[in-house]
Image (cartoon, rainbow, N blue to C red; front, side, top):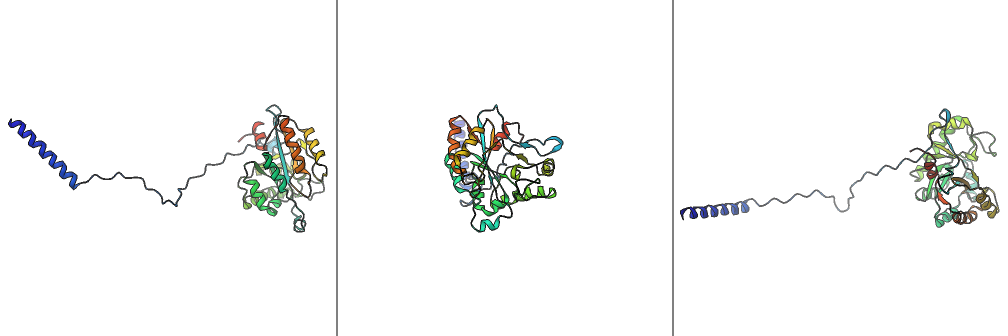
Length: 288
């Protein structure tokens, strides 16, 4: 009996002590991580963009040249468009000549056709809003067609020439212009003005780290007036992996948009899938 009384007293004393502790030392709140104000967005580092596929340097370390993709990796074809404007054509543009082709770009978008646009730096300067719009559209990729559109060899369709010691600078100047107008990720691909090149030109561009991109199908749209003839020439020439060269210049290639509206549905009917140049290089043994 005495033992039970003492045990009960001890329990009462313990309960009183716990009550007193709860009164004097309330439980501490659980600390939550600090949160930014609602108007502040925490900075998240952007994931680095994957490096576009390129080709390994050619013999003697020369700039590699790509003119078509794999013939056995499925029916793929890349439509490419040269947005040409030479450095000395500013007065002609000021007088109203149009070196752009918005309706062509709109047609490609409406048809959902991926494409690679080889743009000169001078063109991007003249049409910065269009250059930025093309460069930020995931349907397209922007590649380098030089700054000046001067030839990199002599006797190239009457184009003015750029000296060998200025070739790399001309290409790099175009990349600078692209970024200035808002083309954030131009591709490391270069198309020689007029398609003219030699070993000296390939050697001069080696430090620039570009892959030179030519073609195996000539669209024949430059200065053409018959859109159906342009379409037939492309359709007759396309093979799996083909790179087709056309133009994105209204004054010099006014029929291109109409030709594209014939080319695209017919190639799709034949089972072809449209891709960008980067896709062809990736499946043709390109390296990252």
